[in-house]
Length: 454
Image (cartoon, rainbow, N blue to C red; front, side):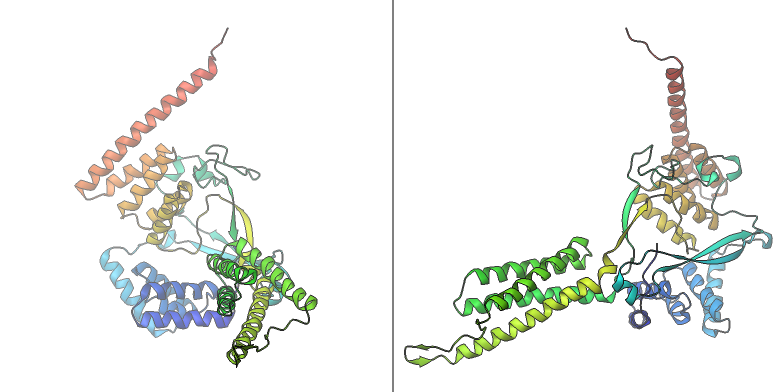
C-alpha cells in the first residue's frame, strides 16, 4: 500500500511532538508520533534513537538501536543502549542464538513503478507520489526458513506451496476470484490510498466547523432584529449541516467530502445570483425613526451583519478551495483483494504475535498463521506462540500441522501444568481430526454410491 509522502516540515513537527511527549513521560503518544516519522523517513537517525526510549519491549528497542547504528556506526549513545539491551535479553534468555551457517543473507533490487496520478492538484502538491518504490529481497545462501514452523518438509499444502490463499479460511484462490470459493467471504475491499491524514485535512475540518458557527451567528442576528423568516430557518439548517459535515470529515467519510463540494458550491452560487438579481438590496438597513427617537443601534447591528456576511462568504470560499484542490488525495480509495499476506518490516517475535492476534479477532485466521509462524520460529522457547499457532492450524482444518506443533511444544515445555494444557489441546485436535476423516470418508462413499429415487 502506497502512503503519501508528507512534507519534511510535517515530519519534523511529528518528531518535535514525539520527543516532547517522551520527555514528559507519555511513551504511548511518543511511540505513535515517532513511528510516523520513521515510516516517512527511514533514515531519520534521531527519530530511531528517541523511538528506542519509547517502545515497550527490549526486542523493539534492540531493533531501533540497530537501525541507528546502521545509519551511524559511530553513535556512542546507540552503542551504549544496545549493549545494555543485549545484556538484558541475554539475562532473560530471550536472545536468539543462531549458528553462523543459519543466518540469512539478502541481496536487494530496487525498482520504481508508475501509478496513476490522483488529480492535477495532487500531482502539483506531491510530484513524487506517482512513483512507488519497490524493494525486492532475495535470500542468498539461506539454510533456514522462518516462515514455516514445525516440520515443514513433511507437509505439502497451501502453507508450503506458497499459493495465494484466502485471508480467512486459507483456501487457495485464483487471480480472478472476488469471493472465496470455500467460505464465500468477499475478498474485495476498499482502502485509503494514503493511510496518514494530511495537515490540509485538519485545516479543512476546522474551516467546516467555522462555517457552521458563522451560519449560527447569522441566524441569531436575524432573530435579534426580529426578522424570523425563511432566511433564519435556512441559516439554522445550514449550521446543523456544516456541523455534521465537520464531524464526518474528522472521521474521514468520503460522502462528507463530496457533500461539502456540492453544498458549498450551491450556497455560493445562490448568494452570487442574489447579489446580481437584487443588486439594489443593501445588507446595511436604513436607520429609521420610531417613537421620535433615532435607533443608532441599528447601524451597529447592520455593521455586524455586513461583517458576518463577508466572513461567511470568505469561509465558504476556503471550504470549496480546500475541498477541490487540497484534501482530495485524503479521500481517494483503491480496491484491494483480501488475501493472506505477512506484514513487512517486523523483526521481533512479540510484534508478530500482536499482529496475529489482531487478525485472529477479525476472523482472518490464515493471515494470523502467517504471523504466528515467524513468532514461534524466532522465539521457540515461548510456548504461548506455539499454542496459538497450533490453535490457528486446527481452526483452519490443518490438524496434522497442529499436532506437529503441539508435539514439539510438549517436548520442550518444562512446566507440568503447561504439558497438561498442551496434552488436553492435543486430545481435542485428535478428536477433531478423526471426525474430519470420517466426514471425508462418508462423502467419498456417497459420491461412489449415489442414492437413486423413483
